[in-house]
Image (cartoon, rainbow, N blue to C red; front, side, top):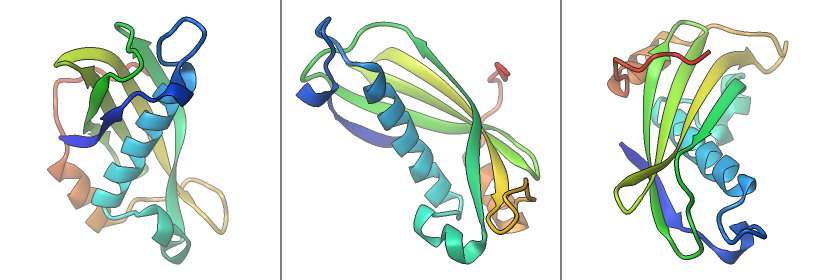
Length: 139
């Protein structure tokens, strides 16, 4: 599902004329926050819920360059879910071509203890709505 889209701006262009590393980190992070909101753990309520997620691993693969002014979108899915973690897969596209992919392995964390935590049944059920199969875990 498409959760994030936009256009590459001048602030994200490096000395080679294409998008810099911070562009990829920012757009993948924003898409992660959006799916986290959809599954029932919004960033602004994590203090109330006393639980949030942290990315323990992130693997970004670059397929082709993206340049200033290019329109882009991110297709995001959950590819793995357990009672302690979720695996998120992002595919950054421009002009219907895959530019980059990102795998994120995110663990639930208890805010008071800062230790790993269990994901609530309601959030687990919500994760299943966005779960796709057939993606191999790169970690």
